[in-house]
Amino acid sequence: MNSRGRYKIGIFDSGLGGLSVLRTLWKETSNIDYIYFGDLVHSPYGQKSKQKVIELSKNAFEYLIEKDCEAVLFACNTATSAAADFLRKEHSIPIFGMEPAIKPALAENPGVKIAVFATDLTLKEEKFKNLVTGLAKGSEILPVPCEGLAKLIDSDRWEDAWDFLDSKIKLVKSETEIIVLGCTHYVFLRERIQYHYPNIKVYDGNLGTTLHIKNKLHLPDGSKENKNQLDILLNTSDSDYVHLASRIAKTITPNHTLSLINTTIGKLHV
Image 1 (cartoon, one colour):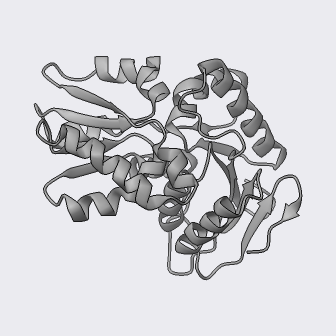
Image 2 (cartoon, rainbow, N blue to C red):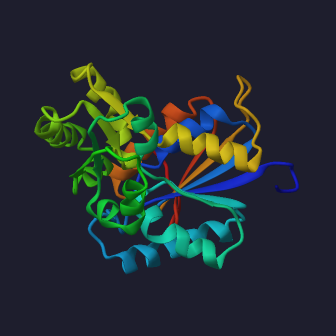
């Protein structure tokens, strides 16, 4: 906690998907300084090697530490799977991560097949395999790789993103109506899923992760007088990314001053 009595928390994602987690954190906490870093130059991470994702995640983590962050959330399932445990062994500050919300989905729907939509690397990683192996006997998981979906969302091609996701839903709908969104990017399409498929139950890890962070760091509850602050740092000035980041940020904090900054050239004006 800094000299002003406030936590400074860094949030990192390969793109803009982690803003969906930040939106939940923002509602549930108050008096926190948030710094969000989107590594858009290197996105997406899903088809990169594990070693490359570790390298990129380490760079992003160290960048946020340089910004005096006292805890860091890997708001990226792929980066969490590949790099979070590795960095926890090297650093003492709290490092939080994301994992597909399989356990809560199964808790509410025991004995039912569950479809997990995620990137290739998330589905192939040991962390995911261990999560599935540790489930109750009789649980059945249907992995659904969605490589390319996060990039469509980051590029502000949301209609194309919906068509992509819709095609994946149609492939599994006859087998299950329980879906876990295993990538923070996909959460931006959650309301559309529920609109078009009202019988499908959709789960994501955003609220569970938020409550875990609040509990571990003893963060103050959100309030009408929300006093959080937000800086969004992007390593690109690409207009599609910048304007999308601005639009999403305004759904998080419409009444607060927002700093949208390119990490190489300084403040962005949008």
